[in-house]
Image 1: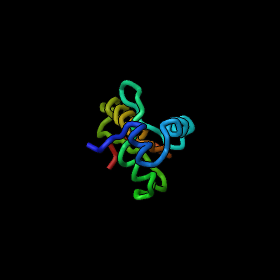
Image 2: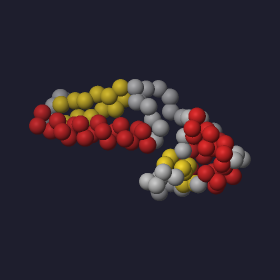
Image 3: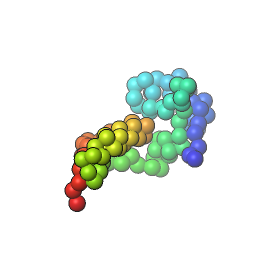
Length: 104
C-alpha cells in the first residue's frame, strides 16, 4: 500500500502550512483525498507529483467497458460506474466513455 500523509506531515514535506493545504484543497490547486470519516490525507504519489518527479499524464482518457451479450447490460453499467469512481478517486478526468456489447 502506498504511504499516506496527514495534512501536517504533508505540509512539513513540502514546506507549506496546513492552512495553505486546506485552501489549496478548496480551490482545487492540490486536492486532498478524504478518508471515510472525511479527514484529508495526501499520498506519496501526490508528493512526487508536487516535487516534479512524476509528470501528470497528458492526452485523453477514454473509459471502455464491454460485455459479451445484451443480457449482461447490468454488468456493463456496473463497469462504467466502477471506472468513473476510480477516475474520481484518482483525480482523472475522462474525456469520453465507450460502452460495447458483443463486438470483436
